[in-house]
Amino acid sequence: MRIALLGAGTVGSSVARMLCAEPELWGERAGRPITLAGIGVRTPDREIEGVPGELFTTDFEGLVDSADLVIEVVGGHDPAGGWVRRALGAGTHVVTANKALIATDGVELHALARAHGARLRYEAAVGGAMPVVAMVADNLAGDRILGMRGIVNGSTNYVLTRMERDYLSMEEACGLASDLGYLEADPSADLDGHDAANKLAILARHAWGGDFGPEAVDCTGIREVTSEDVHAAAAEGAVIKLIARAVGPAGPGDLPTLTVRPERVPRTETLAGVHDGDNRVIVDCAAAGPIEVAGMGAGGDATASAVIADVLAIARATA
Amino acid sequence: MRIALLGAGTVGSSVARMLCAEPELWGERAGRPITLAGIGVRTPDREIEGVPGELFTTDFEGLVDSADLVIEVVGGHDPAGGWVRRALGAGTHVVTANKALIATDGVELHALARAHGARLRYEAAVGGAMPVVAMVADNLAGDRILGMRGIVNGSTNYVLTRMERDYLSMEEACGLASDLGYLEADPSADLDGHDAANKLAILARHAWGGDFGPEAVDCTGIREVTSEDVHAAAAEGAVIKLIARAVGPAGPGDLPTLTVRPERVPRTETLAGVHDGDNRVIVDCAAAGPIEVAGMGAGGDATASAVIADVLAIARATA
Image (cartoon, rainbow over all chains, first blue to last red; front, side, top):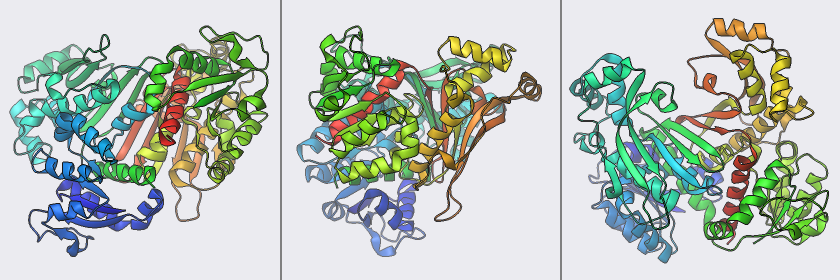
């Protein structure tokens, strides 16, 4: 199975390193050889320790056309979405970590994949290595999901944790988060809640079906949260967390009720204990009751492990 | 897909009720019709609300031979193991909740399944509806599992929780657990740690491969735990929990180190907060760090939902 890797940022570098470090291990787990055929990069002089230099190319389209499976970790809609469509339209499988693309265009991309006999997976798009997409899409298929709630954005959780523990202002906590790489140069996707809304829309589609995207999420970010809010909550035994929450559709044809907003969470509740960049989701099921999954929400190697698990799942399913 | 259900105890009754209540839902999720063809029972006059009486039969072997997929929820080695072998040997898929059988004979049964093109799944054998088998076997395949620790026996956790919270003796707590159905008439599988050892052996084989069973687990149950132990731990900010713990093999060909024993867990740790019949497992991964999953460890409907998820997974994979 020839793999084309698009992107060599934090996640892409980890994927490349991990694939090149243990090809026999992945081949054994996949049931057939896994070969990293090339890495699409903007500038050809890119170097990653342990990764042969001849793998790098700026010819993204040629790379896509030569592969059996494309890993897309560039992110964003354009040009990444075009490469994903090009692959799926040619029957080439796709694994992506691109939550923005999947949140808005996932329904269309699944249809395109189906029409051309390709597989599309994106565990890494939600909650880093925490396997919540597989849980909602597959592992809980024997049940009726009633609702979900969780913390799915590590950056804002880091900011809120610092405000509470270290008595920082929003501005100070954001500065610290930026210095540590928790926040992007443009932090609005995190701070305004859009990243969490993207993830919630993806999970809700898997839980209940339907053709909707992040616009279906009533979304408020954390920008208006003040130190006073945080300490007033603490005085009442609570913490402020950016909670993504879904309640299943009231009836056939209805949409689920989806919100992302800062909530006061009593310290006795599990979600109050989610610190720094961690993620945690609780899925409420009719038969199974609450099922919980947690893990680091980000990080190159953690996210790369979810990407590689998807690659192996496709390799096994299409052997 | 014709389903034979063997056993109509707590889990079997829930499976039968759930399959009969919403056949269209399961058919849609499976990608093809799912039909409950019969239910093997010891006494033919069995009744389950919502389940047609003509489905019950005492002819287990005839039922197995007529099915595309067998659900085995009788438990134990004999005669359940014979029916499972009969099915797999004929190329018939098997879903089971039978931890004792899978812990001791899982390697042989997987080989038998492979030789005859059958699938074998048992998510319900570990942690009720909590999808920890799928997590270790599939979802974390893109990583190296370093170790695992968790609470995988709800009965003993219930007993220890009552001893700590309500100042009960071991004997009193066990009496209460029996009254509530947490403990079987013969409680030794739970109290002596063998049930937890079975589950740990199953998870460890999926994490690291190898041909071993529960005999590889160094196992101590909770019978020797006294109220004094529990309250001495409490005075030092800890709780006593029956912890199943695995450390990956030191080198190629080595076995993992597997223990089940009462441990003092500081209250600041996640596993200290697992109450009553709940289960929780933390899987430590090289790339992803700790990944955690939790849920109710038992209960008819919860376990049945895991059984049905396995049925749907096989139906989709073999369509």
